[in-house]
Structure formats: C-alpha cells, structure tokens
Image 1 (tube, rainbow, N blue to C red):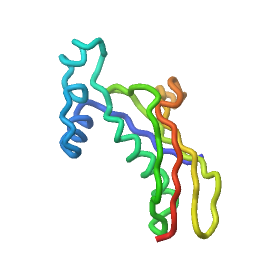
Image 2: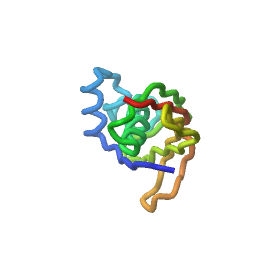
Image 3: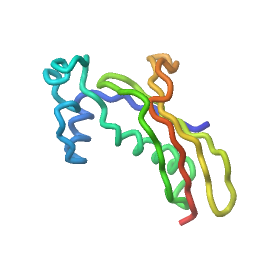
Length: 127
C-alpha cells in the first residue's frame, strides 16, 4: 500500500473553493454549517479524487498518466480532520497499472478512526 496524509483546516477549504469555484457555504462558513447541525465546514469531495490521483502519480512517476479514476463518498470529512489517501496496486505490467483506492480519517497517531470515507479504483497507462 502507498499513501499520503493531509490535514484540512478552514484556510485550505477556502483556497480549494476558490480554485474550483465551489462557493457553497457548506465548505467555508462555520455559522452556516452550525445552522444545519454540523460542527465544522465540510471538505469538498472533489479533493479526495485529487489526493488519490496524487498518491498514484507520485508513486509511479512521470512515465505514467491517470486514464481512469472512479471513487464514491462514504462519509463527510470536516475541517480540522486528517485523512490518509491509500492506494493498493492490484495489477501492473508494461501497459497498465490498476489500483484499489480508499480514504480514511485518522487520529494524531495515524490510526484510522473512520474507514472508507471514500473508496474507488484507478487505471494508469504509460505516457
């Protein structure tokens, strides 16, 4: 398994909202999220696809490109939480790489406290 870890704070969520033009108050407005019963703004689900792509492309290097990425959300991730994006290579040869993917919320010791925030799969091909 290969992985990368990221903690998302409110400034990260605001920066991502600006980059993707997703200005729903759910992602940046603490007063709004409190009004709908949440304790903190919600990490935009698109960021998990970016993390999963990053973990694979960083591991495989510039000779490979992402050809397909499929993932689904399992639960919300809130500002202040840390996630670990994980990829397990399931098949690899000279013409393709396939991987199973997941994102988990971890505590400060790196222990998963919420499994399968997101699950999916990917295929990479040579450039």
